[in-house]
Image (cartoon, rainbow, N blue to C red; front, side, top):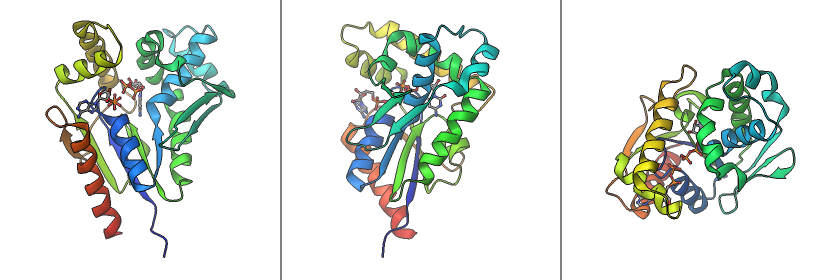
Length: 225
Ligand SMILES: Nc1ncnc2c1ncn2[C@@H]1O[C@H](COP(=O)(O)OP(=O)(O)O)[C@@H](O)[C@H]1O
Ligand SMILES: Nc1ccn([C@@H]2O[C@H](COP(=O)(O)OP(=O)(O)O)[C@@H](O)[C@H]2O)c(=O)n1
C-alpha cells in the first residue's frame, strides 16, 4: 500500500538552517521541497525590475498578480522562475534581500503566494517539506509535523557571513535582526511559532544533527498515519 502523503512545515528566522535542513530531509525521505522565501524574493525581484515603488503598499498590491511564479520542488534541484525566466541567482542579491520584508508584508502579495503554496502542497503525491515563516501558523495549519528552528543571533550571523564571502559579521547580524523584526511585527501572518510546533535550537548542533532530529520526527509521524 502506498504511504499517505506527509506534510512537514519548517519555520524560523533567517540563518537557523531551514533551507539546508528542509532540502536534506526531503531528499532523504523522497518528499518534495518548497522554499517559500524564494517565492517572496521572486516577487520582490519582479517589483524591483519593473520599477515599482516598494515603499508604496498600494502600488505593490495593484500589480502583485502580474508576476507568474513557478517553483520546482525537487529537493536535489529546487528552481524558481518568474514569467519563464530562471531567477535563482538574482533573487539572492543584497538589493532583493533588503526589500523583501516590505513586499512580503503586503496582504495582497501574501494572499496570492499563500494560495500558490497550498496548491503546490496539495499536489505533492508523496508529501512535501515546506519552509518559511508562517507555514505552520497560516499556510498549512493542518501539517502533520511542525518544526520551529531557532539559533542565537551570533550563530546565525556567523553562518550567513560565511556564505557571503568577505561580509562583515556585525553588519550581517544587524541586517538579519532588522529583517527578523520586520517579519515578526507585520500585521498579516507574521513570523511566529505555531502552538503545536516542536522548537529546535540549532545554535550548538551541527547541520547533520538537525537533519537527523527532523528525519526521526517525520518518520514517527509517517508511521503513525
Ligand atoms: N546547524 C548548523 N550548524 C552550522 N551551520 C549551519 C547549520 N545549519 C545551517 N548551517 C549553515 O548556515 C547557513 C544558513 O543556513 P540556511 O539553511 O540557508 O538557513 P535559513 O534557510 O534558515 O536561512 C548555510 O550556509 C548552512 O550550511
Ligand atoms: N513564508 C514566508 C517565507 C519568507 N517570507 C519573507 O521572505 C523573506 C526571505 O525569506 P528567506 O527564507 O529566503 O530568507 P533567508 O532564510 O534567506 O534569510 C523573509 O525575510 C520574509 O520577509 C515570508 O514573509 N513568509
